[in-house]
Every structure is written in structure tokens, then in C-alpha cells.
Length: 162
Image 1 (cartoon, helix red, strand yellow):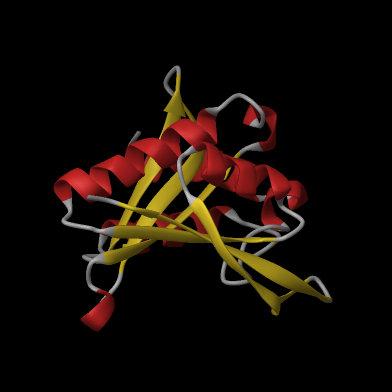
Image 2: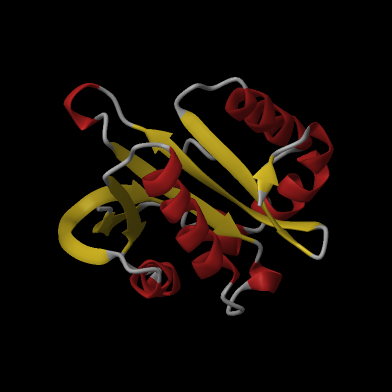
């Protein structure tokens, strides 16, 4: 993993502009996804003090993106995790390895005590990624999200550091 670079814009656009990827992301991540969207995303994440966003690299190629959003106030020792991987890289353990790496870094180097993530219930593969990375299913928020004209349950996961 490494910080995103502006030259990642085309790779990000190609991966994010796949409906099978986008359908599991929040609406703040637009679909269709343009080159301008990718550039805005890279610029926004590079200038943030509370977001730590990385490109997931395999053999020198960007395969996805993972990031932590550090929380504030009474939640300042928690961080929200988000990630997505291009469809052609699914099922290879890439997301699991990235989740494990970013989570361990949060505990060891950022003073974080709790990393949490949520997935839409139909995204079984992403739930499995979190479980394999040591996250515990803490609960389900029924019909918490409205995505693509459908109310979706949201599965809540977290992993605690020492």
C-alpha cells in the first residue's frame, strides 16, 4: 500500500466506474465515476488530517483503495475503515490483507483503540473480508441505508486493539 498519487486517477476511474463495485459504496461515491471524480478524490484525501487513504498495490498496479477516517470528540480513539477492490481482483485475499495491514497500523502507529466498518447486508464477500481480518459482527441496523431504490440492512463490524 502507498498514498494515492495523481497519476492513479485513470486506474481509480476504471475500477470505480464498475457498477458491481459502485453498488456497494455510499452515494457520496458517484456512479458513473469520471476522471474528474478520481482527481477530486485524490486531492481531497491528500489534504486531509483525519483521513488516511492508500492505494492497494499488487505488482506495481493499483487494485483498489483503502482508508481510515479518524473520529473526533469522545470517539477520538476510533476510526472508520472503508475499502474497495476492482472486480478482477476479487477472491484473492487482497482486501483481507489490506484491511489487516491498515488496522494493525492504526493500532500500532495512530493510537487507535477501535476500528469499525459497515457493509450493506447483500455484500457477503466484504463481510467475510472483515471477519477474516479479525473483526466482530456487532450488530445489524435494519433498513439503515437506501441504495439504488432499495432499503438495505447495514452490518456493523469492529476490531479492538490492545
